[in-house]
Amino acid sequence: MSNVLSIVVVEEDRDRALTIVDSLRDAGEFEIHVIGTRTGLARQIKAREPDVVLIDITNPSRDMLEELALASGPMERPVAMFVDRSDDGLSDAAIEAGVSAYVVDGLQPARLKPILDAAITRFRMFQRMRTELAETKRALEERKVIDRAKGMVMKARGVSEDEAYAILRKAAMDQNKRVAEVAAALVTAAGLLS
Image (tube, rainbow, N blue to C red; front, side, top):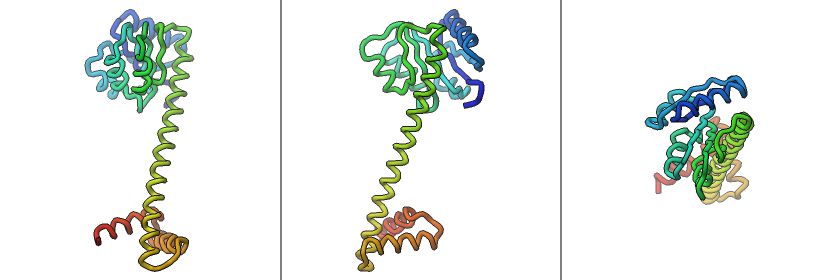
Protein backbone atom coordinates (compact mmCIF):
# COMPACT_ATOMS: atom_id res chain seq x y z
CA MET A 1 0.00 0.00 0.00
CA SER A 2 1.22 3.52 -0.80
CA ASN A 3 1.80 6.28 1.76
CA VAL A 4 -1.58 7.87 1.05
CA LEU A 5 -4.32 5.29 1.42
CA SER A 6 -6.84 5.07 -1.37
CA ILE A 7 -10.30 4.45 0.09
CA VAL A 8 -13.51 3.64 -1.75
CA VAL A 9 -16.61 4.55 0.24
CA VAL A 10 -19.76 2.65 -0.72
CA GLU A 11 -22.77 4.69 0.42
CA GLU A 12 -25.99 5.32 -1.49
CA ASP A 13 -27.20 8.21 0.69
CA ARG A 14 -25.46 11.43 -0.41
CA ASP A 15 -25.60 13.15 3.02
CA ARG A 16 -24.18 10.10 4.80
CA ALA A 17 -21.46 9.81 2.14
CA LEU A 18 -20.45 13.45 2.71
CA THR A 19 -20.33 12.86 6.47
CA ILE A 20 -18.04 9.87 5.93
CA VAL A 21 -15.78 11.80 3.56
CA ASP A 22 -15.54 14.67 6.05
CA SER A 23 -14.72 12.21 8.87
CA LEU A 24 -12.00 10.60 6.76
CA ARG A 25 -10.49 13.99 5.89
CA ASP A 26 -10.45 14.87 9.60
CA ALA A 27 -8.77 11.53 10.41
CA GLY A 28 -5.87 11.85 7.98
CA GLU A 29 -4.73 12.18 4.41
CA PHE A 30 -6.59 9.78 2.13
CA GLU A 31 -7.47 9.54 -1.53
CA ILE A 32 -11.25 9.08 -1.32
CA HIS A 33 -13.70 7.88 -3.97
CA VAL A 34 -17.42 7.54 -3.29
CA ILE A 35 -19.56 4.95 -5.04
CA GLY A 36 -23.22 5.83 -4.67
CA THR A 37 -24.77 2.77 -6.25
CA ARG A 38 -24.34 -0.96 -5.78
CA THR A 39 -24.94 -1.58 -9.49
CA GLY A 40 -21.68 -2.82 -10.99
CA LEU A 41 -19.94 -2.44 -7.64
CA ALA A 42 -17.26 -5.05 -8.30
CA ARG A 43 -16.38 -3.42 -11.63
CA GLN A 44 -16.28 0.08 -10.09
CA ILE A 45 -14.04 -1.04 -7.24
CA LYS A 46 -11.74 -2.98 -9.56
CA ALA A 47 -11.38 0.09 -11.79
CA ARG A 48 -10.21 2.20 -8.84
CA GLU A 49 -8.06 -0.51 -7.19
CA PRO A 50 -8.33 1.02 -3.70
CA ASP A 51 -6.23 0.07 -0.69
CA VAL A 52 -9.36 -0.14 1.50
CA VAL A 53 -13.11 -0.40 0.93
CA LEU A 54 -15.45 1.17 3.47
CA ILE A 55 -19.11 0.16 3.22
CA ASP A 56 -21.89 1.89 5.15
CA ILE A 57 -25.28 0.13 5.29
CA THR A 58 -28.35 1.22 7.20
CA ASN A 59 -30.37 -1.97 7.23
CA PRO A 60 -28.44 -4.97 5.85
CA SER A 61 -29.72 -8.40 4.90
CA ARG A 62 -27.59 -11.55 4.71
CA ASP A 63 -27.71 -11.58 0.89
CA MET A 64 -26.80 -7.88 0.69
CA LEU A 65 -23.86 -8.35 3.07
CA GLU A 66 -22.46 -11.27 1.13
CA GLU A 67 -22.97 -9.50 -2.21
CA LEU A 68 -21.28 -6.31 -1.00
CA ALA A 69 -18.45 -8.16 0.70
CA LEU A 70 -17.68 -10.32 -2.33
CA ALA A 71 -17.97 -7.39 -4.77
CA SER A 72 -15.50 -5.38 -2.69
CA GLY A 73 -12.75 -7.98 -3.16
CA PRO A 74 -12.08 -8.94 0.48
CA MET A 75 -9.22 -11.27 -0.50
CA GLU A 76 -7.48 -8.43 -2.33
CA ARG A 77 -7.89 -5.59 0.17
CA PRO A 78 -9.25 -4.76 3.65
CA VAL A 79 -13.01 -4.19 3.80
CA ALA A 80 -14.59 -2.32 6.71
CA MET A 81 -18.35 -2.55 6.95
CA PHE A 82 -20.44 -0.24 9.10
CA VAL A 83 -24.07 -1.15 9.76
CA ASP A 84 -26.74 0.60 11.83
CA ARG A 85 -28.17 -2.67 13.08
CA SER A 86 -27.37 -6.34 12.73
CA ASP A 87 -29.63 -9.36 13.03
CA ASP A 88 -28.42 -12.71 14.37
CA GLY A 89 -25.81 -14.29 12.15
CA LEU A 90 -25.15 -11.24 9.98
CA SER A 91 -21.77 -10.52 11.54
CA ASP A 92 -20.78 -14.16 11.02
CA ALA A 93 -21.87 -13.97 7.37
CA ALA A 94 -19.85 -10.79 6.83
CA ILE A 95 -16.72 -12.19 8.45
CA GLU A 96 -17.05 -15.46 6.54
CA ALA A 97 -17.33 -13.44 3.32
CA GLY A 98 -13.96 -11.89 4.16
CA VAL A 99 -14.87 -8.55 5.76
CA SER A 100 -11.95 -7.35 7.91
CA ALA A 101 -14.00 -5.15 10.25
CA TYR A 102 -17.74 -5.36 10.91
CA VAL A 103 -19.01 -2.50 13.09
CA VAL A 104 -22.57 -2.33 14.43
CA ASP A 105 -24.23 0.98 15.46
CA GLY A 106 -23.07 2.80 12.38
CA LEU A 107 -20.11 4.92 11.58
CA GLN A 108 -18.96 7.31 14.28
CA PRO A 109 -16.29 9.81 13.18
CA ALA A 110 -14.09 9.41 16.27
CA ARG A 111 -13.89 5.63 15.78
CA LEU A 112 -13.23 5.69 12.03
CA LYS A 113 -9.39 5.84 11.96
CA PRO A 114 -8.81 3.17 14.65
CA ILE A 115 -11.31 0.85 12.96
CA LEU A 116 -9.64 1.34 9.55
CA ASP A 117 -6.24 0.65 11.14
CA ALA A 118 -7.61 -2.52 12.76
CA ALA A 119 -9.18 -3.66 9.47
CA ILE A 120 -5.87 -3.17 7.64
CA THR A 121 -3.91 -5.01 10.34
CA ARG A 122 -6.40 -7.87 10.44
CA PHE A 123 -6.38 -8.14 6.64
CA ARG A 124 -2.56 -8.30 6.56
CA MET A 125 -2.56 -10.95 9.29
CA PHE A 126 -5.02 -13.15 7.38
CA GLN A 127 -3.13 -12.55 4.14
CA ARG A 128 0.07 -13.83 5.82
CA MET A 129 -1.83 -16.85 7.14
CA ARG A 130 -3.23 -17.64 3.67
CA THR A 131 0.26 -17.38 2.17
CA GLU A 132 1.76 -19.62 4.86
CA LEU A 133 -1.02 -22.16 4.39
CA ALA A 134 -0.49 -22.24 0.62
CA GLU A 135 3.28 -22.67 1.08
CA THR A 136 2.73 -25.47 3.60
CA LYS A 137 0.34 -27.28 1.26
CA ARG A 138 2.82 -26.92 -1.61
CA ALA A 139 5.68 -28.26 0.55
CA LEU A 140 3.55 -31.21 1.66
CA GLU A 141 2.63 -32.05 -1.95
CA GLU A 142 6.28 -31.81 -2.97
CA ARG A 143 7.25 -34.08 -0.08
CA LYS A 144 4.71 -36.67 -1.25
CA VAL A 145 6.08 -36.57 -4.81
CA ILE A 146 9.67 -36.86 -3.58
CA ASP A 147 8.71 -39.85 -1.43
CA ARG A 148 7.04 -41.53 -4.42
CA ALA A 149 10.09 -40.87 -6.59
CA LYS A 150 12.42 -42.21 -3.89
CA GLY A 151 10.32 -45.38 -3.71
CA MET A 152 10.57 -45.79 -7.48
CA VAL A 153 14.36 -45.32 -7.45
CA MET A 154 14.70 -47.72 -4.51
CA LYS A 155 12.74 -50.39 -6.37
CA ALA A 156 14.44 -49.86 -9.75
CA ARG A 157 18.01 -49.66 -8.43
CA GLY A 158 17.73 -51.80 -5.29
CA VAL A 159 19.13 -49.03 -3.06
CA SER A 160 18.27 -47.64 0.37
CA GLU A 161 16.06 -44.59 0.94
CA ASP A 162 19.08 -42.36 1.65
CA GLU A 163 20.82 -43.55 -1.51
CA ALA A 164 17.64 -42.98 -3.56
CA TYR A 165 17.42 -39.42 -2.24
CA ALA A 166 21.10 -38.86 -3.04
CA ILE A 167 20.47 -40.03 -6.63
CA LEU A 168 17.51 -37.61 -6.96
CA ARG A 169 19.54 -34.78 -5.43
CA LYS A 170 22.48 -35.39 -7.79
CA ALA A 171 20.13 -35.46 -10.80
CA ALA A 172 18.61 -32.17 -9.62
CA MET A 173 22.02 -30.54 -9.26
CA ASP A 174 23.15 -31.84 -12.67
CA GLN A 175 20.01 -30.38 -14.28
CA ASN A 176 20.06 -27.19 -12.18
CA LYS A 177 16.57 -27.98 -10.87
CA ARG A 178 14.97 -28.51 -7.51
CA VAL A 179 14.68 -32.06 -6.16
CA ALA A 180 10.88 -31.72 -6.23
CA GLU A 181 10.98 -30.89 -9.96
CA VAL A 182 13.14 -33.92 -10.78
CA ALA A 183 10.93 -36.12 -8.61
CA ALA A 184 7.77 -34.84 -10.35
CA ALA A 185 9.31 -35.51 -13.76
CA LEU A 186 10.23 -39.06 -12.71
CA VAL A 187 6.75 -39.76 -11.34
CA THR A 188 5.14 -38.34 -14.48
CA ALA A 189 7.42 -40.33 -16.79
CA ALA A 190 6.75 -43.52 -14.83
CA GLY A 191 3.03 -42.86 -15.09
CA LEU A 192 3.32 -42.55 -18.88
CA LEU A 193 5.30 -45.78 -19.15
CA SER A 194 3.00 -47.92 -17.04
